[in-house]
Length: 187
Ligand code: IMP
Ligand code: MG
Image 1 (tube, helix red, strand yellow):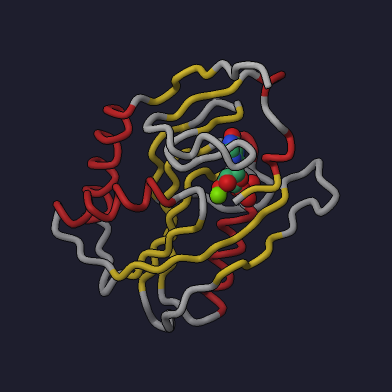
Image 2 (cartoon, rainbow, N blue to C red):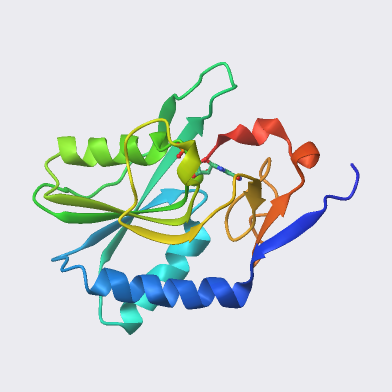
């Protein structure tokens, strides 16, 4: 495989500073008895940093994980979401904050939101590290956004291309002719 060229979009320091800002916004949002639900796998690095930043500003959430797999447009199973692992907590009457890496078509987060609302959650909010605003297929907006993201294929900070690059401490973009479309069926 030829060397993948990566353009750095958001550095480690920029991401850390923005996560501290997000934690303050979340602390000021008036959540009670908050349950955060990190959507695996892509959000694991972001969620780990965000909950510790929330701790520093006095927020003490419970933490759960939901593992979803989504297939983007262009694959045979367009728009389909599969639950690979569900949360264990009872969400009825609770404030819930969904954490994801990227809000793109919106299908993944809309699916998770609707599932928790159906189970009686009182308030379901969304924090996305990256927002690709021009790409929405369903109606959902994040309550908290780390960065607006250009319409490019990005990797790093938990986000993968065909299961690789999640370990990068920064977020980079891959040249259009270099990314693997199989990464579209992603978590
Ligand atoms: P959607 O909002 O349901 O379209 O899904 C967003 C999910 O697709 C994200 O959580 C990622 O897992 C994946 N995704 C979207 N854009 C990218 C990208 O640029 N690189 C890697 N994964 C992506
Ligand atoms: Mg994801």
